View: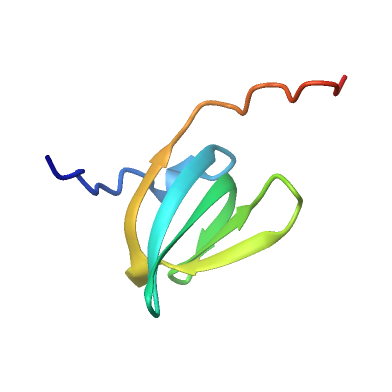
Length: 76
């Protein structure tokens, strides 16, 4: 059974935690983080480590809102 690739994220989801899959040369890349902005066809996603990933919307093959990350062990 093949996975369904669906994009359910919109610009109204800015501020939400999302997961994305996009086409890159040689395959696909995933990014999970907070959607910081979606302007001029580019999504900006802030990953857990604080880095920003810029994703051209035409490269998206799947994206959806996901629940907040669970607390990491040993962190308070």
